Image (tube, rainbow, N blue to C red; front, side):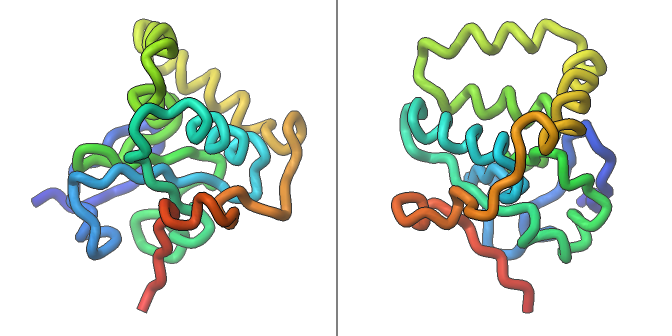
Length: 155
């Protein structure tokens, strides 16, 4: 089995158990910066327009002590999906799979070359606090969402 190494923008071939025990390849978990207002709005948007409530959520701040996440830039959205980690524009586009059918047109962004998509992602992510601001109350702590938030407690 391949050892996990974090390089932004690539998908990673490793099992979740190597990184965070007790999760399987069937789980889909979106890791967000819980201080970022844009990330909180992304979660709100997903909750409003998702089709089947299968997506789970987690805070990047709560997993930063795990070796896999230590070198990760906190401005990077990460998703664990079908046994792989995806970051940046790939992670955002995978979220589209969980939205209602009338958002299928967002899949057209896959036709942009990945370096261009990730450059746009980096421009927005690098300025997200200036443009959208920070929040002290994370959406992941809201009562209706608690059952879908994955808490990672390191022993």
